[in-house]
Length: 99
Image (tube, rainbow, N blue to C red; front, side):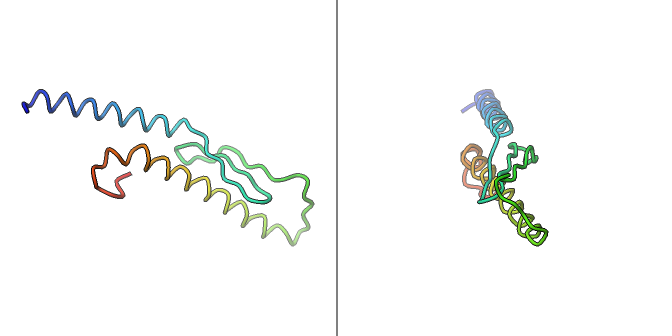
């Protein structure tokens, strides 16, 4: 394989990686539990928090709500990580944890 072919292959790989990363960045991920639903983008930026309005909360329940928000956000973050690994893992060539 000559150097020009290697460079062309590297450029193609870079283009594919950038396309996959853009797809991840533009995807909205949802995390949820019984009372809370959150939306984040692929850059792990929190976009929206929705609390089930049919539930009435007493002041004692605020701590539980905070825990549920934390769980929902972490659930959405795991979904970003999963998609990132699925889309970008093929570019890592056996180097786990690269993305």
